[in-house]
Length: 387
Image (cartoon, rainbow, N blue to C red; front, side):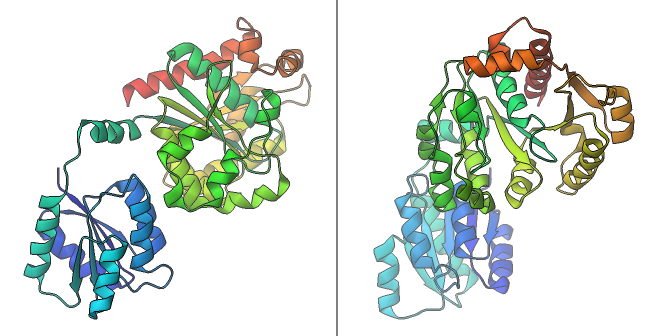
């Protein structure tokens, strides 16, 4: 497999020319146009070498290097500072923050190639433990659940699906409620008010480490590990931290076989970034004209995010027994998308589950609604095995 080199430079010509030269030498090139983007890509991609410019507008190369060296996941990646600054003090500053080598612009391609080869040769190969970590980070099967607006049962579907996956697979399952400021999962499951998600989102994306995320998970008696959102209204602003959300999902995927995400309602920027990371997407709607019309628009918008419509399952959640609910066949026809399953109206079951602080699937394992949730879980497990 080709060695991967991350180039971080705000100069487009440098990215293009140096990237092309390295590609011709057989390297896989990853590009970032500023320091913040470089940090995120370094953490996600774990390159074999980082070629880093010093003078960048948002975050200079010195600060990028400091942060890379502070993070265990990137602390050992070789860094070659590549810049127009020629003063000795500048070079010393680079080495002091943790750079491994230093080249000044412009440099001859042969000189750059020699430095790259030298750094890669000196780099410590990944041991079995590191390779196991990388493998695990690509293991998790992520399911994102959302709706067009609140109150349609996304959290209910997410918690019961997570319980169903744990029941059927007997493997590690994580349930994450990614709706800061609007959290209800902790209260519904009898957990103390949670702040871990907000703490993760307040930092930088590079600080969203696997270890930090793992320590934030709480194991519920049903066996599922949970990351619940806070219910503090001011935390809603954290939904805009799209890079942190993306990094969080990537870390969660490294920690369990199945990861169920409660994405709330609508398509904020963070959800737009998360949906392409998911293996499966579930949209929850109810059988009313407004819900059907809005969900149809939502489906169209999601497909613009390069999401395969075949990976989207629609769950019709008829929460109340009412003649106003449109039958599933008509909902499917109006929606223009198949309905995977319909949840039978059973308010008494969910009231009992609420009193017991547990998902309905745990409260009454033999109930008809439980079987409907297990049907979703079984289908996801089959798709996960076939991927």
